[in-house]
Image (cartoon, rainbow over all chains, first blue to last red; front, side, top):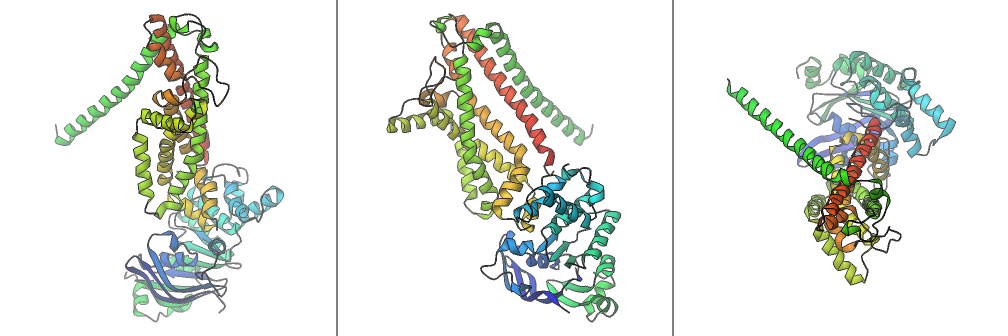
Length: 251
Length: 282
């Protein structure tokens, strides 16, 4: 296994509450690692620790290290915008930026100076809309407001927007939970295709989705990693009693 | 009848009463101004400056005051915007967790409530200390001071209504706070910004007390930032204060012009804000 992200001794506190306890994990490159567990187990907090989103919330502290490509993203002197550029984020509910479909994708390209105008920008926007499987549906209304899209299309737009900054990781925080089944299937198909190029970390509480997508599985409970391993092993032969109980639907 | 039905009816009646009160007041004001002002309103009123003996009922118009008021209110609104937008963005983005932010809001709210004559007197004191005379510039500065709290708080409320996820989406793409504030928050706020500007403009153009000392009054057209300037509220005030009925009617005509300007600005900004709201995330 070739680890892309290494988490060492990570503890996260919200005020006096400890949300993550002593997390040690190695997330493999170009695989889908699914994080599952009952709500409140720290899944989302863990995801937020990978793109330094924790610090956007009041009163959070952490100890330990998160290494991406061997570099501690919390080390002093690290540029937070560079770290976030390494990770595309799919939130639970899609929030397009208040601009057109085209500009949503172009936004990241522009702020990072990857393409600012003209043919080059047009090409890139088209490329990432295709990657996200949205191009055919929006090619005739690129300059229409992003809010005019259906919620499933908006989530694919958010995917295109995230891919456009050329990240190495894709973080998904229950990205299909607000979507209808067909839109959810679209997203799942894209994720399966995208794992050729990206390391994907996906939080979900849908067990069947985890079974469909996961190469590796992390099972979390009450802020701790209970079990981590290749998907088939965790699903077929869970080592821990709590994992067995969760898989059997007892939480 | 059930208790819940009685409650329902009482509240419905209260709501209708409030509606009638508000709409009625507006209608009554418009009607008064129209009835009293319209007969005195003619082309000369709008296109001429006061001629000799204007305040005795002789010929001339209030063009000096119309242009003066537009200069004052537009200048003050632009000046206030230069300070209010950055301040509101600061309060809503950078200072989100800054513990003094609420004190800043409190002081702005207090300033909002300060009577405009106090702004006028304050401006007058400063002006005397600096050895300045009443001028268009003085009027613009004092009106801008009057506008800043209104504009900032109105924008601040708009930013606070914005879902954090929109900012979060921008941060997740690796943008800085500044890029997020300028390119995303401002875009999302545009309709709210226009409303805030309108609110402040309306207050400034209609205010007489604050410009009384600092902008003065003149029968001439405004030509320089450093000369006194006429304004519509003061035109109303001075003409209404004469003992001649025909001059008093012209005060109502001036009030009508002022009302029409505010109405036009309101409708215009509503239209603009509707257009700008096209991309807003609801």
